[in-house]
Image 1 (cartoon, rainbow, N blue to C red):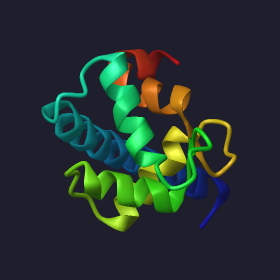
Image 2 (cartoon, helix red, strand yellow):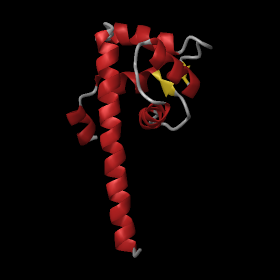
Image 3 (cartoon, one colour):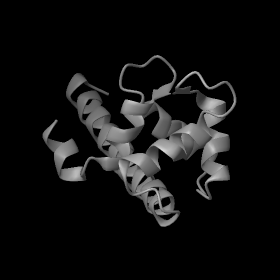
Amino acid sequence: MDKVSQAQASIISSSFSLNIFFLVLQKVRDQIFARGAKTIRGLGRTFRTFDSFDGNNKVDQNEFLVGLKENGVQITKDEANLLLDFIDSNKDGTISFDEFLIAMRVSFGEIDRV
C-alpha cells in the first residue's frame, strides 16, 4: 500500500472510530439522562457513584465499567474502553469530573467545532 492509500485508510479508520464513539456516547447519555442525571448536580452524583471505589475524584477503567453497569448503561467492554479513551482528554488513564461533564453536556455540534 502506498503512502496515499495508507493515509486514506487511516482517515477512514479514524472517521469510523469517531462515528462509533458518537453512537456509544449518545447511548450512554440517553441511559444516564433517563435515570434523572440531566443537570450538573445530577451528573455530579452520577460521577461520584462511578468513583465510589476510592473517592479520588477520578474514574479509572474498572470504576468506569462498573459505574456504567450500576447506572443501567448497557454497552460492551470494548465500547466502554473506546468511550474512556475519547473522554480522557489529558490521556492520564482516568476521567476527571470536568472530562465527564464535557462528554455528557457538550452537544455534538460543539464537539465538531473543537
